[in-house]
Length: 238
Image (cartoon, rainbow, N blue to C red; front, side, top):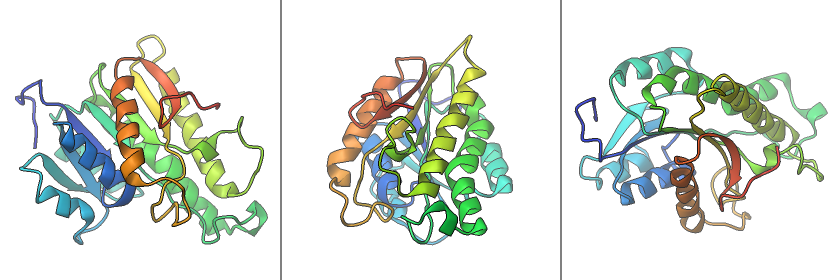
């Protein structure tokens, strides 16, 4: 694992939620670009990230984290003490059993789970790990175009939309605390991608989308302040 004595020329990205799908693909893309990557998985079973680590020549470190566990977040922070994180990116997303259910058909338990996983837990991770990210580093989270209030003219997926809008608001609140000395922060709306969450009908593949997302994240490191961006680096209405 990188520490305070690591060469500054080697950048470290911490990708939270990298066991498979979009998170794992983002980790793989950073590895291709010469970064050291720390990726988190939720349990102890072998994942796609473990397969990636076997080919990464020691440049990929796997950590265990259930972001819905405050104790596990604190434990990860303790394990990473002294590590410089040049890019912290939290990838988290879940939805209701019926993804298109109207809000009056969503149970209390489902709503709380979606809000916990998609909004509260990512912010708890960011709050806990922020001091490992230097002023020139980037803090980011995976949002969604469906979190845009300004663009919402079709409705549907109401609980999921609400959770991503909440995430956007919470990270903006976090950024507001740093308005006198802002650092780069980004909320990413990746588009509809073929993943377990996106489904087989999604029009975009990981292979064509992830390099664009990583381009946006790396470019954003040169622009302090918070932005809500799509995979092309264009601003998404809040």
